[in-house]
Image (cartoon, rainbow, N blue to C red; front, side, top):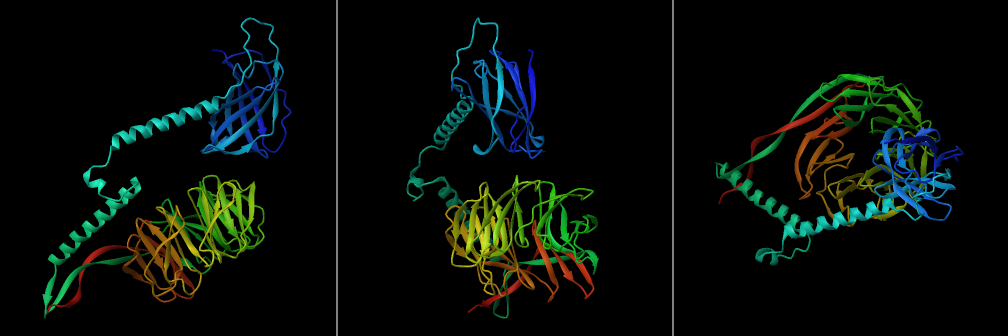
Length: 509
């Protein structure tokens, strides 16, 4: 079938005055091949949807879905349906971008000139057309059908289930997890008891202890002082004293490459979406580098009011905080989204999870919508909170003072406090959560804490006094920079295996 594509460039910041023509009553043959731009740069449409809204001269409307053909280049296509071309006058058009069915951006209106056809036979009667809504209704119907099938397959409670005070599937799963945990603990306790030994009227039980294996990955000269910032995709990303980002292999410690030197020290570092983002404390800007062989500088943000102290990222936005504000930038750093006054000093703690931005402040944890930066909630508004981590439905945080020896756990759904951990001997300088374990990094030790019981598992590794310079935990391994001597720094990692040893439980009477 013969098809005609009108290629147009639509910049969301400027009005499009290009002359676009189509012929009345053409059907299944005319398409708009659209390149969406923001100030001349392609809009990345990855993970988004596009729709076209048209208004005809007779006030009838068209609202249809488009097809994204090249997401990273902002390219998409729209069919000009027979209803769109039913009236031989100017057709007003807007392109709308959606994310998770929420409208986030509209183009400025532009016009398509529909030329009158000389062929009158079989002319289409003009009416409204809402193809996008039809698709949404179809999705709702399919969701309803799926829920009906799920209810039929799950069935109704039996005699045992009816005797339990469980109302939701989540409660049932939590009950099962708790039951399995308690049962497994009984099995473990039984196994340990079977391995117990007697000596001089004392009972000794075998215990699993962590035996750290310490590997020195790389000795680093005084000029570099590579400060471990993050570990991702098998690479350790460090900021250096000579104001660069140095990248090392996480297994061998071999240096892979480095960026050019920047104006100021690194206030924070983020690696996301194939880019490295460097918060420059001097220029108060975020510098963007490619995360590849060249590590070339690709651009920079507008200057912030104060020096940036933390960075985090979503799939389409970079978030940063300084002493008083939350900022949002597009991934290209070309577009400043919002500058939000926090109303309290930040505690250099920032986290993005499930569409929300969590900011640690001197007046609690402020929670913002990631799309429009509207304040959603404030958690523990009377207390300073920092070291924020969101994992598996739980928000983890500590105080921001010498009292930061306890981890607070909040429900991600209700934002209510659900518990606290054991108090540690030292304040927290870094908090990481992986696979049900909290890694609490103190001044000279790292502690493992169970998320479920909130009790300490064991003291993993005692770090020599003043040696811990910077750190990150990834996949159960602690990566850190140690001060070996006054002029030499070392990049190290600590991983371990559990071994059996015995400890005294008490006297047998």
